[in-house]
Each structure stands twice: as C-alpha cells, then as structure tokens.
Image 1 (cartoon, helix red, strand yellow):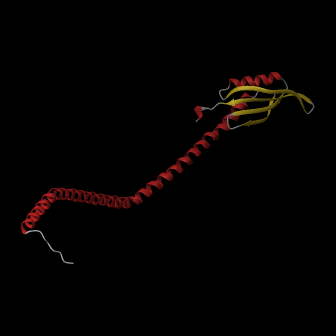
Image 2 (cartoon, rainbow, N blue to C red):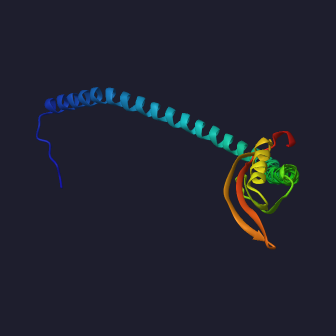
Image 3 (cartoon, rainbow, N blue to C red):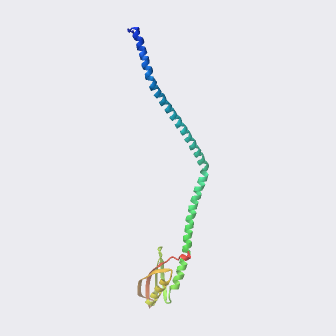
Length: 190
C-alpha cells in the first residue's frame, strides 16, 4: 500500500519539529528515573550477592570446623554417657553399702531390747521403715517392759501394741503379742 502526504511542506517541517521536541522532552525525565531505578536495583543485587557469598563462605567454614570436631564431640558424648552409667552404679553401690550394716545394727539393738522370758517369733520390715514384731512371753508386764525398752532406744520410735492375747505353747499358758514400731534412720552410721 502506498501512502501519500498531502500536507504542504511548511506544515510538514513544523509537525516534525513539534514531534521531535515533544519526544525529546518527554523522554529525558522518565529515562533518568528509569536509569536511577536500574542503578539502585543493580546496587541492591550486588550487595545481596556479596552478602550471600559471605554467608556461604561462613557456612562452609563452620561445616569444615564441625567435621574436624566431630570425633571430639562424639568422644565427649560417649564420656558423658559412661559417666551417667557410672554415677548410676555408684548410687546403687551407695544404697547397698548403707543398707548392708543397717540390718546388723537393727538386730543388735533389737536383741539388746528383748527382756528375759520373752521370745520373738517373727520380725518383718517394710520399705517404709515400719517393723512388725511377733512374740510370746509369760506375762503382759514383760511385753510392757519390752515396749518401754524399744521406746528408749534411739533406733525405734512410735511403738504400738496391736494384739496381746492368751495362748498356749506345749501346755503352758503364754501371752502372744504383735506390735509395730518405726525404725529411725541412724545418720551417724552412714
């Protein structure tokens, strides 16, 4: 298709000048803004790349250090576990050591408290330190004496008579009794 310009020559040149002025003036300010924005974006991109590269180098350095320290860390963890196991064993040994002599001291003190003509037929101690004693004697007075001796002892407390009843042993009349007391911890022996 062919275009034909029917405008006179003078109007053609004025239109071209006006179009050139219009285009040049409109492009300077937006071009400067776009250029400035491009510079800001480029600066930000460069700054971010520098930061990322620095962080990657730091991460690589820390990874290298952690790989180098991994055997030492594993050894420290192993030693901590072994120490915990050893502490547990030492605690168990301490409990056994504490309880080892307590039974002997308990029986020795109990033997000291038993009066003449009183025989113990049973003794049972629970985990809480309560001691249940059963026995026989010829008189309620002997049972009372036994209870008083237990109360005076530093190893026993809260002595209470549960049952005292008549019974017979080989055709003899006896008093069968059952009492409870609390075994007090002996701190000086620990």
